[in-house]
Each structure stands twice: as C-alpha cells, then as structure tokens.
Image 1 (cartoon, helix red, strand yellow):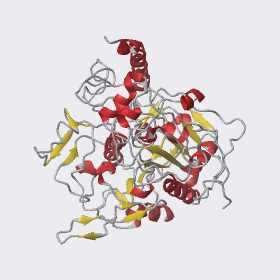
Image 2 (cartoon, helix red, strand yellow):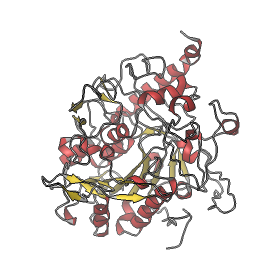
Image 3 (cartoon, rainbow, N blue to C red):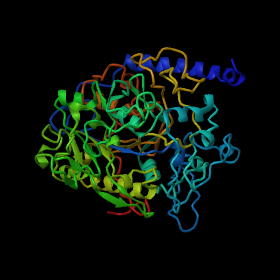
Image 4 (cartoon, rainbow, N blue to C red):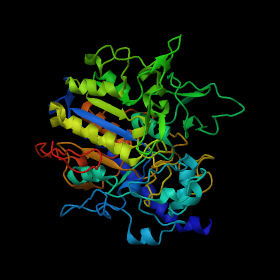
Length: 524
C-alpha cells in the first residue's frame, strides 16, 4: 500500500465504523410519533410543523459562507455583523487554515464587490480527487476553475457576515448546522435527485449519441454521476435525456394524501410552439450585470420521474388546486407559491428553486442576488398567519467543487472508474451498503444548512450529522408515520433535523425581518 494511503487507512476505517453505527442507530429508531397536530391539509403531523418550505440553492460549500462565523471583518462601508454574547462557534477556518493552508493557496476573504463568476469543477470524480484521501489539499489542482480569465484558486475563497449578512443573521437568530453534507459526491442534478429520493441509481437514458455518449461518462452502472437533463420536460429538450425509475418523496406524499409542490423560477412558459411544447424564456439580470435564463430543468428533480412530472409546464387549474393533483401534477412556477401563500393555501411541503439569477453560488448568480431571494421569502412568510407553524430550510445542492476543510464521513462505498477517494477506482473496498448500487460514494462535501422557524432553536449551532436526505427523513417522520422510500435510498440512514428545533418550547422564536439590500435587521 502506498505511504499516503497507509497514512490515512485508519481514518477511513474509523469512518466506516462510525458510518455503521449511524446506520444501526437510525435504522432502529424513528422520530415519528402519534400525531400531535393537524397538518395544513388536515393530515396528522408528528411535530408542530404544518408547513415545510425547502429552499434549495446552488453550489456553496460550508466554509465559503460560514468559515469564519460568527466573526466578520467589518470594514468601513460594508454592512456590519457583531455576534451576540454567547454565540456558539462552528467547525470553521482556523488561523492555521487561513494563513498556512495545505492547499496551493490560502483562503482569501471576498467582499461585496466580488460576484464569484468563476465556477469550479464539481464532477463526482474531481471532488473525490480534491479530497486527496482525506488530506483535503488538492482543491486548486483538481476542482479549480480553468475558465479564461479565472484564477484557479478562486474556489478557496470565502465570504463573511459583511456580504452574506442575511444568512449570518438568520444563523444568529435561528439555527445553523455545521455538520451537514451532500448525500453523495457530484454536481447539481445529482444533488437534486438525492434531495427528492435519496437515490441516483435506476437511470434510463433516452437518445444517447454514440459519438458523444452519456452512458459511461455521466451514467455509470445505472447510476447518475453527472448532469443530464430530464426526459419529462420541454425546457429544453436535448438529444440525450435521463429518466429516473423508482419512488420519490412526492410519490409517498401522494399516497398519503398530503399536499405538496415544487416551485421553480421561470417554470411558467413564456410561449408555446405550434404543437404545444413549452418555451421557458424568462430571463433576469444579476446585480453584477449577468443575464441568464431563469429555468434549468436539471434542477427540477421531479421532472425526471414520469409519476411526478409536468412535461408541458401546465399551470394549476386554480389557486385552490395548488398542492393537489391536477394537470400541473405538483410542479409549479415560483409565482404559484406566493399565490397559494397569500390565499392561505400553502401546501404542507414546498420545495423552492430560485430562478438562475438568485440561486447563489454559480456564474449566473451572486451572494447578493441570493440574499434578495431569501430575505424576500422569509419576510413574506413571516407576514402570513401560517408562519406560526412553518419551518423554512435553506440548503444547497452541491459544493461547486469549492474548498471546505472537513472530510466527510464515508457511509456508502463505491468501486467504479469514476471513484478515487481512497485509491484509483475506489471509494472504500466494502460492498455499497445501500442497495448494493455503485456510483454513490458518500457523504460528499460539507454544505450549509439553516432552519428558520418559530420552532427553531435560537442562536444555535447544531452538530448533528445530516445530509440532503435529512429533509425527506423529516417529511417522512412528520407526515408519513416514518415510512421510508426504500430500495437503497439514503433516507433510511440520514440524521434528523430535530436538533435544530425546540419542540419542547412553545414555538415563540421571534420573527426577524431583514433588509434585502444589506441583510441587516429592519423594523416592519
């Protein structure tokens, strides 16, 4: 065994033991209990949350937004952040990591003038190589941007509370988790699939071109490891698409009669072709002058499944029908969310995907544009009478290959030519624990996770091990009596979100209204 691999063999052995312990503990315990509340649609809930709103943002590792929390530089001319006494610390960037980082560049603080348009390489294989057997020291070489005019070390850098001010204020007044990870390695579409099903295996590819094959490059042994657009979507309709088989959380919610929906910016067609095909041409321009199309079908995970898709982007039959099964089939435009919310018809479970310009960490967006979205959402929901039993979860689809210093616990192994975490072709040597499916090495990179709710713990940092499927785990426990998706879904072993809530209290965490421009508290 090479010296480097030997040096970290014990670390991975310890992670495997920890992963097995997590699996055993979660598999034998359900957070579900007899209903203590009635859901928004009359369905019983095990916890006081009747409305869950999941905001699924783009491409941000934890250190990129919260690496120095709660300590901001506070230079003149930028919004200030001063932590309240007793604010807990996070597993963040130590002085040594800031000044003597093992990577080829030290992390640098970014200010409000930097839009971060240089995206990193967030491929399944590249991210594993950046981890370098647990050394976490090859992010510049393996995932650094190669775009013209971009600094390859840009993905090492971070914002603090003078730019992502709103997110730091939400962490200060509600609950932040610093031990949450992508369910597996890989880019945005992989993360979206994990969010709704905990499953990236079971792919059917349509129209693959032998001259430029997807199978073998982005689909490995029936598992998605790269970005491919969904089969059941008009916007766009490329030559090669991907269909997912199996069940997702929407299927389970339908079976139990629980209202739900996925709401996307730009989902509403701007026109239709003569045969009725939807054209999704809505565009916006960011604070930094970047104009792009709002809708990206690959980020709308339910469109991969025939059972939960709305291929032609048909609107709901009425505001009252939002959340129920009709021609829209639970897939909506973001404007439909607000129509339902203001008419006191918010579904029990809502997934929100911003238009491209407000998604956060990608070349089409920025932290300031993302702040506009999240403050507008939370401010608006706090004005609704449903706020008293609402929880907003802010989370991310992947790390964009950007730097985070924490090595994730590996709880599911894989051995394919796209794996390289522990050796060439390997993410551990054991048979994959979940369903035996290859190509699902996980957990992946560490990501931010926030809970904003009257029932949230206040000024709290939760260290519970969680991942993207912890959200559907919460949904299953609250509305579905703990039923799981099955067939190797990560929801069977995901850690709970309950450490971010105070259900023993009375749901009295104070409302927090923030200015969308500065991210600072405002009186409304």
